[in-house]
Amino acid sequence: MLQILIISQIIISVLLTISVLLQSRGSGLSAAFGGDFGGFHTKRGLEKFLNIASIVLGFAFIANSLITVLVSV
Image 1 (tube, helix red, strand yellow):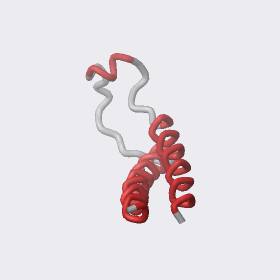
Image 2 (spheres, rainbow, N blue to C red; image 1 turned 135 degrees about the horizontal axis):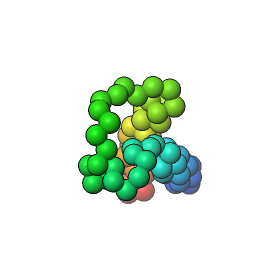
Image 3 (cartoon, rainbow, N blue to C red; image 1 turned 90 degrees about the horizontal axis):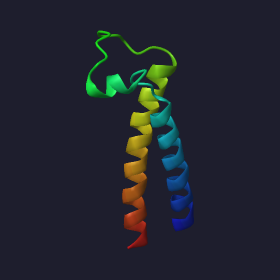
Image 4 (spheres, helix red, strand yellow; image 1 turned 180 degrees about the vertical axis):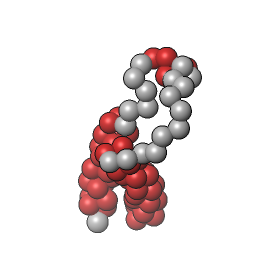
């Protein structure tokens, strides 16, 4: 059981990393310091999917971590 949880933790962490890295916040270094004043826009398509996937994978990562700790004790 513990091995399954550890393997799923690795898979979730890789997917979470990929989903976060694929999200594009800005198109340059100036956007990191607040230089991008493009206005408000809604998320659509792939951007919305990656946002929701990051949230779901984040919760799955935390839940899996807690379950792994409880099983290993």
